[in-house]
Image (tube, rainbow, N blue to C red; front, top):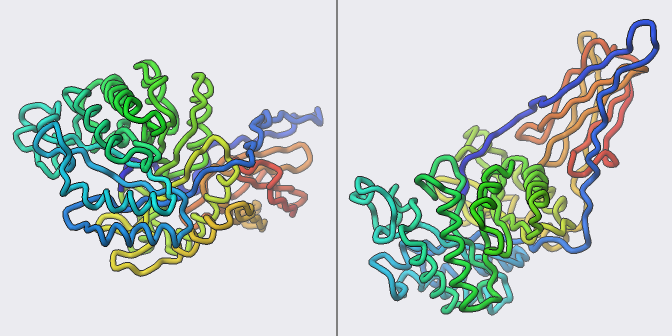
Length: 445
């Protein structure tokens, strides 16, 4: 998987406040109500799509045709592939390796023939260009699998020259070139070494300048960031990235909708209204065999399908998201996030994506809520759509209780309310933050 540092939260109460009537006053201290309005959604929404396999040692042009055919069967409007620099120029600068590009040529040509937008991710430094220390360079591998390949280039201009060649080769058959993968990833699997914001900004500027000199119509994507709190993005702004991208790519696997909202707020606060390209998100269908895969919580195949439907519906009218590109078409040895198994069998998620991409504008699943009395307290339980924090508000007379929590891997929740609320005359409502309080499920006991 191209993104791997996630925090999984299950049925975790993040903030809860219980406030009681003051003795003898008949008044209650109330927690301030959330002033977050429901997300306003314009008519225009993102292009929906899928991550396909990039060129590798066993890939063939015939496989490229099959991958594009699957994308068309899914009603995708955009596809994303990886073009590793280490494979394109394994031995030095200059010409591109035609053997490494045979698969990409066929896939990109086939996509263009069917009017599919193509995002090409370019990363993985070849040994000759790496800035890795000498001890790592001594063990560098030409296939791009060593630690030295994750270090940025010693000369950003080398990267610029290479993506300029890609822009020349493909022109507007490429909708966008994505500059590197997850430079803020804590495990440094993709972008290692010191001064990451400054060094990434240098690579981005070199790539943007070279691509735009060849064809200004090709979009340049910065980021591929995984940190939704915006801390790394602020450091990139300080390093001078503004003006060197057409959009910001993000990879949010856990609480995807909350991540987009929080990240957008950081953008706007810094005077940046460029669109977000959500070009990686998804769920590995490895439960119950596994609990976690690549730091992402496993779900069942049925829940994977359900999540895909609800996430695409939630985003269908979000104007500031340019694309929502699911990870990924096919399972691999280290990831069960695909719509197809490694043998090519379709999971329930395949039909779910095809259906929602064909007709995305319906509302996500509704929040459900049930109340029962257990041991002198009310227990609220139910389900909700994936992707964001949930809110619970309970009241009885002057008593108030509020909680913020997340769903479990099956998108369900169960919370015990404070015993002080009692078990009679209690009113409860629950809603997802992205959809807003108007979508709340409400019950009384």
